[in-house]
Length: 347
Ligand code: DOR
Ligand code: ZN
Image (cartoon, rainbow, N blue to C red; front, side, top):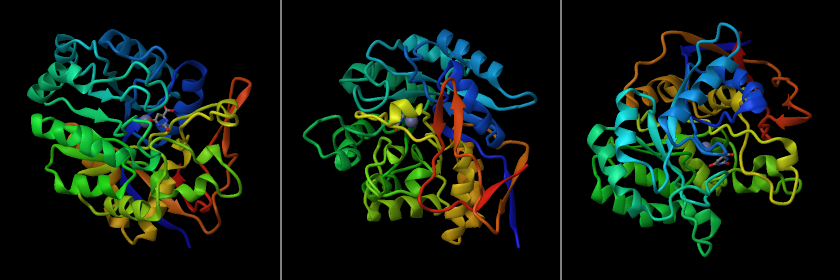
């Protein structure tokens, strides 16, 4: 028998849509499921001004499938020369919904990010004053810190001092992957929230090496231990409004994945909501799904939940699909962990 569940249409509070052919190829997968998405600004060159964001927003709207009402919510790539006045003006007209902090060198297209956080304090102070959220890639880039400890080190070295200096600044700790991160967010107040990805609810670092080294399980922050995975899953289903869905769907063509120096990023948009529902079912928490996917994030960003619903069904047999999409002369592979997928969207 099929189990069905209807929930308010979800939003994706962390999404990489890219541009050009890639945008056109990946956007329909997100637009089918989500009402809105926080669109990450790590294009080449990055989205650093309201004008660039508006042009990018228009390209996204133009690439939407016919009749889609999907709304991209734009973000600003924080650099050490981001202007305070520019941020104030852009937030006033919601040209930007958040500012994204990429520590320079932490991940894909982060070279123009922040080296010294003190340099961006005037911007952060203004954001605290106007209530604008700071979205954070929470990893240190110090090469002497073990890659699996970079989130925890970021808390000690960057987040704690920042919270002390600017306690009212709204912060989104993006793609939380560690027990240390989960424990930290639970200890904080409502100004500190976190997104959780579908893949970090399904993977441990074992998956990176299962059956041979697998770049399709590689993203940043990298998947961690079983204890971390358990903590992240528990936080997601906790019903605590400080944890909500951000897929971090990050497409790369297979030629960028299947090589030495494989690109970090997992394209999960097509299977995202199915896998999230599946994890919530596994943890007997389907009653908490709607808050996590469709309510808490909107509330944090000062928006109302979407006015429509989606229906998800649990199938008797694993969901079948092509597991890849074509882009130009290449393909982008869809996130397919070892766990078969039983849940999908009812059209
Ligand atoms: O795995 C990742 N991919 N992590 C990020 O932080 C960036 C993203 C991308 O843009 O490919
Ligand atoms: Zn991301």
